Length: 289
Image 1 (cartoon, rainbow, N blue to C red):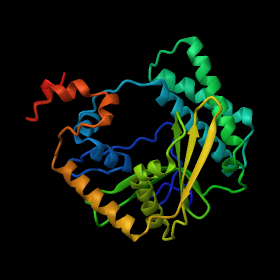
Image 2 (image 1 turned 180 degrees about the vertical axis):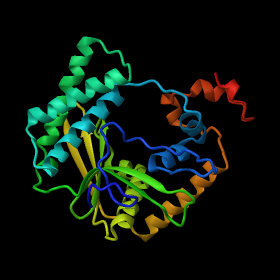
Image 3 (image 1 turned 135 degrees about the horizontal axis):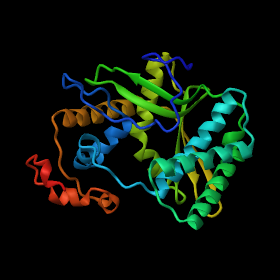
Image 4 (image 1 turned 90 degrees about the vertical axis):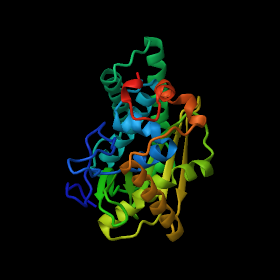
C-alpha cells in the first residue's frame, strides 16, 4: 500500500477531513456509501435523514473535540514513525494540544478556561499512556495512516468509501475509539463489526491480498488512562455474507428514501428529538423547525 491517490490505492488524508457521507449525483446515484453512514441508517433512518440528507446542524461537544484531537495526535505519531520523523512524547502531546485548539476554534466551542486546562491535561495524559503502551512500542512501520479507500462492489449500486485510522503489517486495519469508561470489549466488537468488515473488504479488494487480523484500540479517558487493544481474526465467509445482506438492505432503504423513527436508548442523546416529534411522515420538511 502506498500514498498515491488513485481509485483503488491508499492516500493519506488531510487532518480533520475524515468524515464521509452519501450524496446523490445528478443521475440520482449515491456518490458513495460509508460504513458510518450504513450504521447511521440502521440505527435510525429518520436521524440519518436529518443528519445526512437535510444536513441539519448538531451541537458540538467537548467530547467530540477531545476525541478528534486525540485521534490526530495518534495520527501524528504513526506518520512520524512511517517517515522516520519525530515521535518524542512532547512532540505528540503538542500535536494533541494544537489539534484541540484548532477544532475548538473551528467548531466555535466555548469552554471555560479552567475546564479547558483540565481537558488538555487529561488529553495529554491519555496520549502519553498510548505512547507508553505495547501497541505504540511495537517496532513496526505502518502500511498506511489515515488510509482512504473507495471501491465498487457488484453487490451495491454505489461504491463503498472508508477512512481507516491505521493499517499495520499483515494489512491489519486498526480503529481508534476514545471512550469514557472501560468498555465491554465483546459487545463493542459486535457493534463495530460492520465497520471492520467493510475495512477488510476494501483492503483486500485494493491490494489483492488477505487481511490477517483486525484491531480496535480503546483509549479509556478515566482518571488513570488505560489503553485496551482488542485483536480479532478477519471476518469469515458467514460474517462477510451477513455484511452484504445488511449493506444491501440499508442502501435500498436510502435509495427509496425510506425514513422513519426507530425509538430506543439512542433517543436520550439524539440531537434531533424535537424535529422527530414535529415530523409527520408526509415529507413536509417545513414542519421540522
